[in-house]
Length: 328
Image 1 (tube, rainbow, N blue to C red):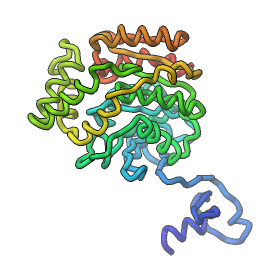
Image 2 (cartoon, rainbow, N blue to C red; image 1 turned 90 degrees about the horizontal axis):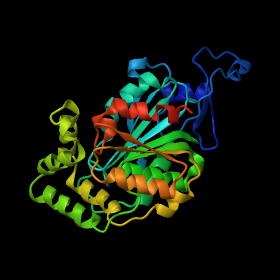
Image 3 (cartoon, rainbow, N blue to C red; image 1 turned 60 degrees about the vertical axis):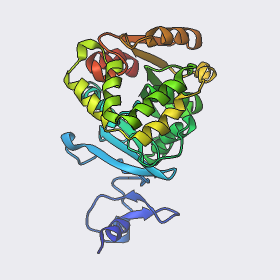
Image 4 (tube, one colour; image 1 turned 90 degrees about the vertical axis):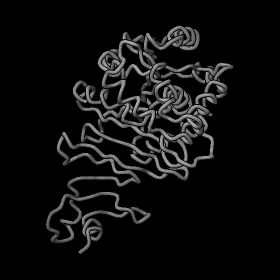
């Protein structure tokens, strides 16, 4: 008997012919035994079942199809499907491994949580080659929605995003407040500046004319503080930026050319925490102003010894700064 037939023999099919509930393996004798369902499992488009995996191997790293491309995700942590889920949205020019150090520490401190990170591939995002389709903020919000839907996550405990991911976090929280308990938005501006488009076009030109490696060296100097020069995180992030796709950069950067999420931010009623690296240029002052004016009940945390990616450059301080907010 095939594996599919074995599963169907021990389960109940829904109206679409999908296996909706699953019985623990065991001998099937009479009709009464067939009706004794020991364990329920609702099947969905994306794998999410971490039970029976050793703790050090309790990871699902795969893709779902969405909007004509692949959405890469990595799910790890608690095997209990009712556990709170933390969703992580990364910056432009990075992949989901930018969260490695922070999540490794969080798995020690946030027992009983699931950690879900993702990135867009194939037609937009980090590794999109030959991409001519510009990204939009609505696209980025739909990525999160599609991922939650595919994993049957009705409501995430929080979404945590940085830079472009921070903007995505606020946009998602304002448009889908029923899918979140709270959110953390880091190192971003709520409205584009007049210089955004020209600045990003100049960076794209550098990547095309010189190379992504040249852009990576320029970017890491801007993103990290001088004290972190040549550290392991500095080197890893430089390599990550250098490996990014020029087409993906050009597609995703267009989201940042011209936007204003101020009114949407003001409409959010969910608990929110804003975080910024103290060494992130003018952003601490910028974020302090728009948080005070648009989210007066929210708190702004400033991370010492960190620039644009505090969850990378000083991940231990970052995790400590968000711990109490997430465990409220």
